[in-house]
Length: 206
Length: 172
Picture 1 (cartoon, helix red, strand yellow):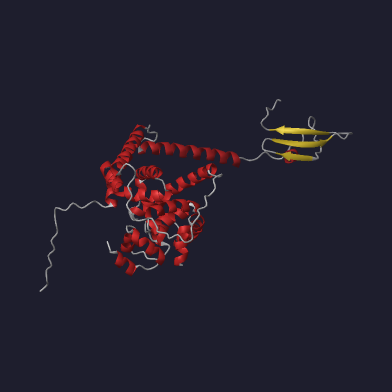
Picture 2: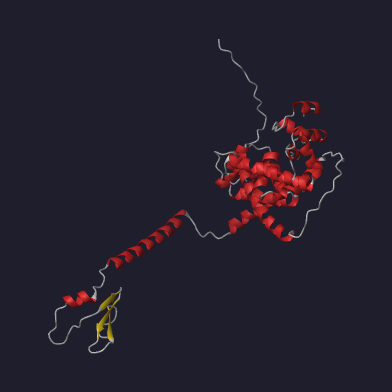
């Protein structure tokens, strides 16, 4: 006799529509669905923009621009691909464009600024303060190209795998790993130059 | 979230374990320890956290939606040049007909027989007994509309250049 397994299925649980379903509703002209999608993705989009750009206000503007582009291009989304991959591609494109423009502006303005050398007592014990890490990252990551920085952020801070990053950027996985390797190397060099107290921690552990 | 003891016992260099990373991103005490195991965790420690735009999520979403409404209004107010599908088809058909007609006329014009070189014309022309006397020519140059003939002048070095233009009126 076959055993019958009964499962209790709750009937009054409201299931949130998935991203693809929301996109379908937006395509039919549902503004409410778009608002739901924006609300759902705000932290992700803003987080990536903030870490790549390093400035809250700029990151907010870029995030808004990303959502406007999303709304304008919603017909182009192919539901056979993950929605987040498509969204991240849009974010990285807009953020990289912004950084390239910003870099050329900054180069013109800051060409006369010199790096301030930090004096460190070799015996000084260093405790890593979390808030400082963020500012160190912003200072050190300036040497990276927009693409290197975006890949570094997606890999190290957004915890995306190389294969996912490759899909987002439309390149090979080996290219992503190559950018990552170079980014780490450049940042370590910068860390030694500008923040030797942290670089020492690095060298001690090697 | 795991305890510091668990974290320190399980941490390995190059970890991508979500639970370990979550602990690392919230525990200052373990950050120094983690740096000793794997320095690449230095920048990894600032990731993962959900970030909120300045002013909060509600204000952000409100801004985005108001911009979307403005864009929608602009789009709906914009003049519709293209019109319906039938109108677009009619425009496309007119353009195709125009291009085809032009190319046909062009081909017909090109395939029309080119004016014969003057040399051949002169040779084939029946000799008029009294009025026409042909002269020997030195060289001819042909183009679409005209032929230039260099004819030796009697008794001197100067050469007479004759131009036969089909487009010119016959009584010129």
